[in-house]
Image (cartoon, rainbow, N blue to C red; front, side, top):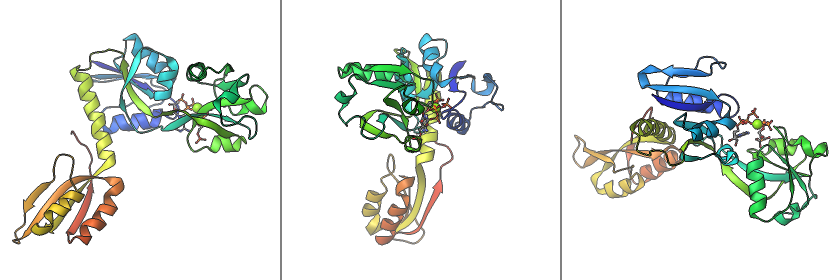
Length: 283
Ligand SMILES: Nc1ncnc2c1ncn2[C@@H]1O[C@H](COP(=O)(O)OP(=O)(O)OP(=O)(O)O)[C@@H](O)[C@H]1O
Ligand SMILES: O=P(O)(O)OC[C@H]1O[C@H](OP(=O)(O)OP(=O)(O)O)[C@H](O)[C@@H]1O
Ligand SMILES: [Mg+2]
């Protein structure tokens, strides 16, 4: 049975459960459940603190886990990313009160940086040869500056609202970009069929979320131009219509581009252009 670690709380937990549900897996019904077995899919889910997931997976007791890339790197556990999942996207950045330090990383020398991600910050400073103190806090690190515990913070930034509300602004380049990722123990068997099947299911959800199916009719003379607009993933399906000189075309297109592609197809004479949602997919 495949043993999978899933975040039990925080920003990762809801979207991870939604994605697993869309991929056809049973999920817990109550937030207090710490473990469920999905016998039909031969999978056991363990609901763990996001920060702990890389440690469990690195130990080899759990086969794979869903966590944040930043949490994986911060843990320094012997685990590696195998599939990015596209949610819980954030950047990890230094921030401070305007005017405290310049945009140059070297300005952090001799300062105190408060963060919940001590591993990432200490390594980043060491890699750049900057001697600064790091104070570990569990959360709400923005307040550390107001209360004088640190002059600089390093934290997750998504919309920037938390920083603005605390009167802070980012300084320097982003330390890293993060999103939810699937991880496994470093060097674990990449070909393990159960793991491969799990990844294919999640990839199917990602594709279903980012593509729509597009159908349209066009004149045979316009087919090459039309196909160039909708190349599909492999190649579009082209079927003859009862009316001679016309064909029906079917191809997957990125949902974000669907409206523009429909305009372009219309302009070259395609008609009856339809898009439909994809509910599930195996590439
Ligand atoms: N506002 C946010 N937007 C996007 N991703 C976020 C946000 N806050 C945290 N994350 C991501 O979520 C993961 C952290 O999960 P974790 O559950 O530890 O913290 P959290 O979501 O801040 O929850 P809490 O602080 O309530 O425990 C990291 O990968 C981080 O990049
Ligand atoms: O840029 P924003 O959209 O404001 O999002 C970023 C904020 O979200 C998280 O905080 P959370 O609410 O989880 O509190 P925490 O700091 O205690 O983790 C993170 O630590 C930032 O503070
Ligand atoms: Mg948080």
